[in-house]
Length: 180
Image (cartoon, rainbow, N blue to C red; front, top):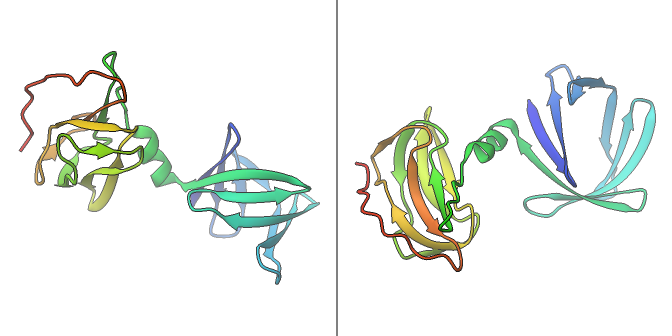
């Protein structure tokens, strides 16, 4: 199983094999991790070095306190990471962000309409691909200016799905018809 951990501006690829071996950025590590009986405290023995940490989940990230220093750590599995980074926002000169399909698939639902106000991270399209539903989210705050697909439509990788104007941008006029 692969995970991507982001700490400050650094990303670490953590791979855990079924036998308990761990690779961090393709380098084998000797790791022994234990949760302590007191809530949120972990003991880690890594490459013969002992580390104690207080760990608390904060929704989309974890607060990790080690030796008096607090770190905000984001952790995603490989699938979620790839989906997030495959999305193209396609922000154009006129300030419109474009949600595009990260892969070929079928549109399951489009929970937004032209004129809807969306926030960064709001669900704007549900796409089924390889028998899995993927929620595509708004890449920015704004107003939905274009809905170019409907439920049941087949889409290709990088196909434009939803246009979102960013604050202060003029709303483009474009006569594209939704894919069906």
